[in-house]
Image (cartoon, rainbow, N blue to C red; front, side):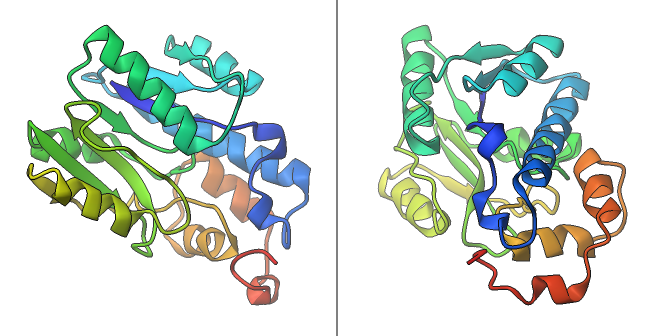
Length: 221
């Protein structure tokens, strides 16, 4: 099962506060989520998808695309949300889970197919972010093979945890999934790539942000 954790989009992307106000950050978060779910919806061989959220916009979009919603009323954060959703998958007898964030707007169907093509069973597969700090896709078979703990520098700990299981662990570099947008450096990376047709990329380009704007520290402080 594919799990997409979504926090409250109305207050999303606080690390972009140095260059974008909250309405713009919310618009960007929702555009990116729409890009991700649209790609999944267009994938003919897509397995079951669970949107782990209680965000109104995310749940409406899930209903539009006929994806399941796994309610996350406490909204404790991505790590706890995925831990809860993983327990749901285990209780249902799901063999594997693939966790993808809702802020990888350049994701493509062929990349998802590559993940399932190379995913070991049993074992794991990780897709690092473009800066190789974060984890932008995590496949586990069995579904709870090791716990996922997300944050700014999750890739190395996830890789170590995966290797510690003694099962095969594949690291796959995928250019679209690698681009998530959490901070100004990420947004600049998105803008530096060739123009695409995703909602998030078109939105970001419409703001006409100048290089001087990105002189702020990448962590948004």
